[in-house]
Every structure is written in structure tokens, then in C-alpha cells.
Image (cartoon, rainbow, N blue to C red; front, side, top):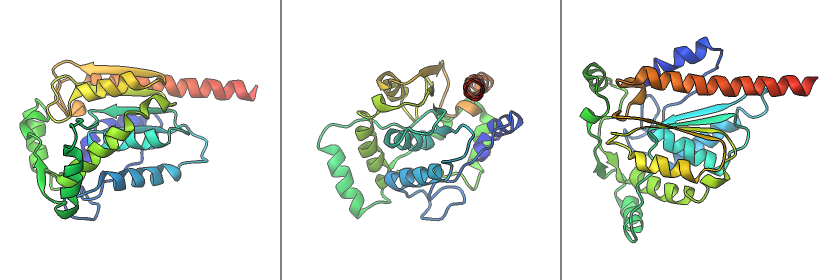
Length: 243
């Protein structure tokens, strides 16, 4: 949550209520450090969304990186009850040819903690001060992605590709063109497959941490403007219904 210390105050100032949680094995959540199953994460997210059902205010979802994968998988399984979705630098999985995904899942059952993919810390952001702060943040996982997580992301993302056309909520897809952690190509492909109201915002030259990179003010402004338009639309519809 600390990584969004520029976004959250702006949302609160504009009257939004912000809810969030640390993923298993990350931040202050319990579990082996850095070890998690993507399917479990998606179940947690759907359970959290269920607690918001029935209240009168519009619900927006935002997910960055692994959170973007989580939100995309959650919405693919249930896109109802949402006023909008924002995917930032989402980890939507790189499709691998058969039989590699099956082999990965089989090995993951035996060695779930096996380190597989290491994200380059120097490619998270262009801003050195932000990289230094992240390097000394005790709640930020800095190790390699484990095999269990990587294999589950690939499996779920592959299933989600045929579900994107069924989305009904408006969506904003954000990605830096020089993101070395999550390939923007797959964010663009997901955007192209969606049939709901959609907006693509590519940030030229930006790395992975869009809200903590050199174009962060532009990204923040784009997100807030997109949210404002949809809140105004929600209020307008509410007024029309009460006339």
C-alpha cells in the first residue's frame, strides 16, 4: 500500500473510500515470504468484492503488476457490480508453447518455492531515490518469483484470454512502453480483446512503476480524470432515476 502514497491521498481528497490488502506472502500478510498461488489470490479478491455488494456507492477496482493480474482474473470471473476497472502494468502472463505450462505446474507441486523469475530492480523506475527507498523497504518482497506463482499466473491468464470479451465494466489499461517486468504487449492484447467501454494509456519510455516514475504526474492525472468522468456519469444516472 505504501507504493500508492501519492494516489491514495488524492482519492481520499476527492471523496473516495479506499480499501486494499497485502497479498499472501507479501507486506504484512501471513504466509511464506514471496510464496503464493495465483488461484488463491483471486479467491481472496472475489471474497473481498463480495463484502462490498449491496452498498449504494459505485465500486472501482485498481490493480498494479501482480495486483493487475489479480484484478483481471477476478473481473474475468465476475464483472458485475463494478463502475470501472483500472489495470496498471498488469502481469497478464506470457503464453508458452505446450508442454512447458504443464511441466511447470507438475514441478511446482513438488517445489513450489523454487525461484524462477527475478525482476530487475534497476528497471522498476528511472528515479534513483525511489529505487533506493524500495531497496530498504522491509515490507517489499525483493526476491525471485517462485515457480508456484509463475505457473499459476500462466494457467489463469491463458484461461482469461477467452473471457475478456465478456467484461461489462469500463476499463482503463495503463502500461509503460519500456516495462521490463511485465510486457506491455500482453496488456495491449487484453485491451484489444475486451468489448466493454475501454481506454488504453501507454506511457512512452516508462518503466514498471508508473506512479513512481518520471511521468507519474501524467499517469496520476489520467487516472483521476478517468475516475471523475465515471463518477459524474453515475451521479447523472442516479438523478435521472429519481426524477
